[in-house]
Figure 1 (cartoon, helix red, strand yellow):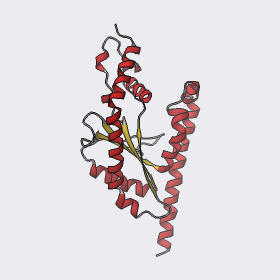
Figure 2 (cartoon, one colour; figure 1 turned 180 degrees about the horizontal axis):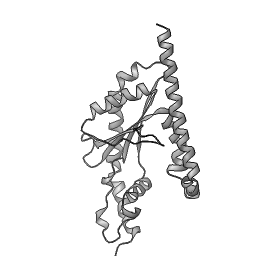
Figure 3 (spheres, rainbow, N blue to C red; figure 1 turned 90 degrees about the vertical axis):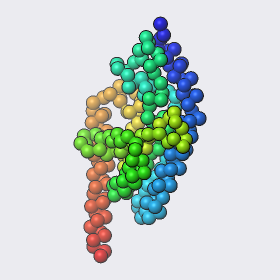
Figure 4 (cartoon, rainbow, N blue to C red; figure 1 turned 180 degrees about the vertical axis):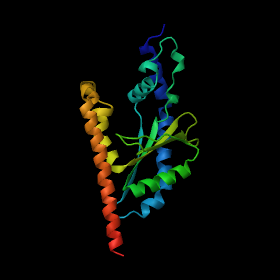
Length: 215
């Protein structure tokens, strides 16, 4: 019989075997995305932003995500060979933060065109019914045949909020588990998302009025 510890040890070994490929995919994908978005970034107004960053998922995060994907959020100790980190689509990732929403839509159009064979997996936030964050995943064959990459296109205000929210709520330390699961805390986070969207909508509304007035 194999215990969970043995499965995790096996997956840790696999992670470090894959790590050179993961890094190559992250570097390659960041360079590709920056190149494809160069025409957009060159014409940004002073108040507009398009920021591209890459990241490599660390070993513990990769194991925890693979575990959460299993039934009951646990590994079957009777079938240890079923599990591989290659099943994850975001070991290597690129995030594009864009402001305002017009640039966000323009960036998404360009990425979809350039990575049309990649799988789309948009996500909603808070109580929104429409997708507010776009995600695409697939292989960068020039960098690796073993590791998939992921591109996230995120409204900048939400992306900056994530820098705080993910550590406190989405992926909290053990001593913050009760905070992360508190219903009122989750409701507060939802209100933050809505407030950030309202800010951006009002900004673009006033910007459009100003441009019309200057004609």
